Length: 106
Image (cartoon, rainbow, N blue to C red; front, side, top):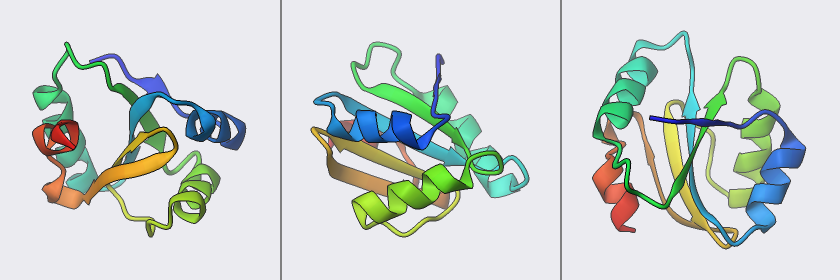
């Protein structure tokens, strides 16, 4: 799976203003549940999908997670996956309820 790194609030703001459809996966490298969810997400990812996947390292970029929570109205959790298109949240999931198929169907 080819992740796009989410590394700045400015990048997040540009993504939110775009018309693209994307998923942000918030990951804590210190959490075993997050590691399990990430592994399953990567294993189940549909490489033919036109949805762009972004990886957010929460330990390095908690400020970006805070901006995402503020802009979307979705409380921060970890792990968390949020599907967005045209700046609108289509679906979100947390912990072991993150299923690629359900996100991509939204």
